[in-house]
Each structure stands twice: as structure tokens, then as C-alpha cells.
Length: 57
Image (cartoon, rainbow, N blue to C red):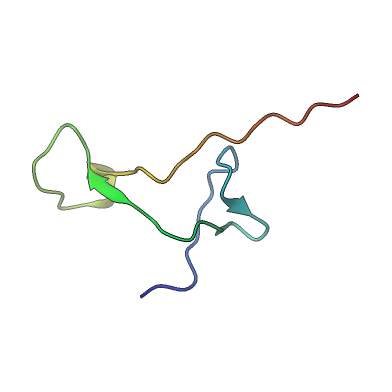
């Protein structure tokens, strides 16, 4: 099992320093446009959760 998952989506709540994914589990599916993926562009990360915007008081 992968222990070092890289991610550049800094708008995700699981994004961590060093472009790391801090989620405990990762869920990836084939995209809606294909039944079987043959390249990364044909997959989608379902683990993504939008990060809450920081509120400055």
C-alpha cells in the first residue's frame, strides 16, 4: 500500500505541506467519459473535499 501519496490540489482539505495527501484513504474511479481507464487523465479522485476558506477576523 502506498504510504507517500503526492497531490498538487491545494484547494483540497487533505492537501498538506510538500504536496502530500493527508487523507487516511484514497478513492479513485474512472471518469464519466470511459468505462476503463488507460491513462491518468481518465481517472477522478473521489477523496477530494474542498478546503474551507480561511476567514481573517
